[in-house]
Length: 210
Image (cartoon, rainbow, N blue to C red; front, side, top):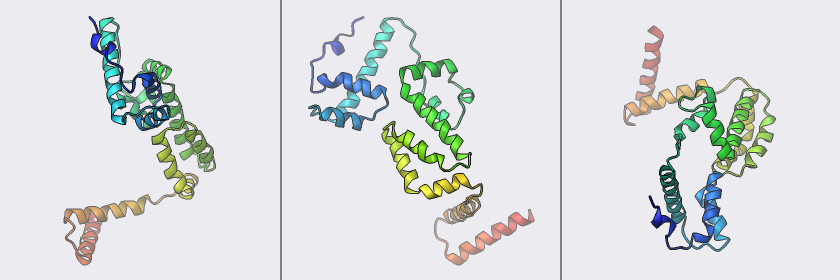
């Protein structure tokens, strides 16, 4: 079976930069960053063209795999997303072998996973000073999405360190605020202060006697 049209397509604006796009995407770099990079080299096309190219490239690779009758395994992204809050051995649908094969092809995933595990350790270590070195390590990856999160941490770093260092938190206060918000939503925001107060006090009384 021939893959003719894709292989023989007329070169466009992106042709000189196609390998750059493929390589940078394999490292997890965003389309916006890729676009900025190749524009500096002379590219004059749009970000949308990069996305369209990669979609065609992935379709092309799948077709090649089918033609060569090689077994190609695609692992759904949702399984890797579960690594955010689960240990690898507790993620159904993702084996140790699959993980090793994937990070061999995309090393950036292993760096992110190790960074995640280290962050989890620091949060429960009560050693707040360690968050500074973690932030430096995270910034070294130069990932746009991660940088956004880091900027949020740095903007309120004192509160972040306190939450690591001390065991107590404002969970009780937040729970009470959420109950008040829920009561207000149930009444579609039409309650005045006195009616809302009465409803909250009535609910508290109900829970006390039951």
